[in-house]
Length: 298
Image (cartoon, rainbow, N blue to C red; front, side):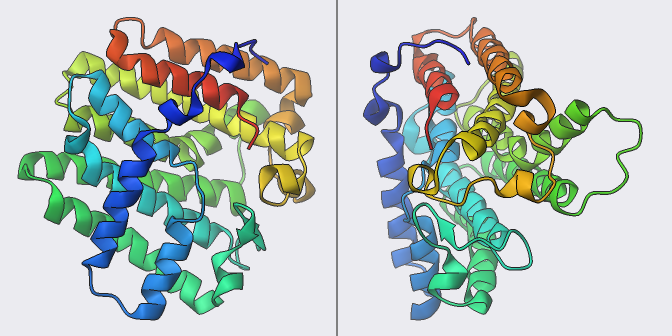
């Protein structure tokens, strides 16, 4: 894997926008009438200790192109709800059937399977309501909703490819793996970066560079995830391990081996940094976030 000065990374500074996003989400839910049991379930899922990488990317990409963080808060909060909805549904018995998420019982274990389905449904639709009602510019809101819609649907395509695969045709295993994860993992990361750039008024060239940056870190994120799945313990990771390989799913270590996966991470890390070469110091948080994602341990 890539050699980085991990001690240089200030994780608290890298993830600083997460606090504002959580406060924004909390205030939104406080003023949005929901039944008490539904609100409890949504809050359990949303505020369960996640890394908030996607909303952080929205904020940091907005800043990188010269925007202000507050311009991107609705988009950042919305994408966290979509991501959390996907995790809640992914954990269900009909999907991955997981008992543990972020070191706690999954939502269907904490509440019920029916409530987990409904809470996931609610978070998905609330995300678009939040953008439509909280963004000041209707034109920007429309662009952001388009990006989030495309990202969400591509993510679902990836989940189908991963969970209910069809005949891969002539694709090599590594090409098939990348196709799955450009959708399943990469789609929301790509949407996050593009949403942030749109909120900050990015010109076309910058938006294209942020898109390529997102594509590189999306594959890198999944490669690290797959590596941790075979090298970590449930206590370290906060969720079950060895589950994908045990179900016969394509994984980076399964296709490339552990050392090959580490080399893949190194190459994708370099690609992501290269896409930020024409950005100034305002993109430093994106560079640091890329470094953190390459060496994260959970």
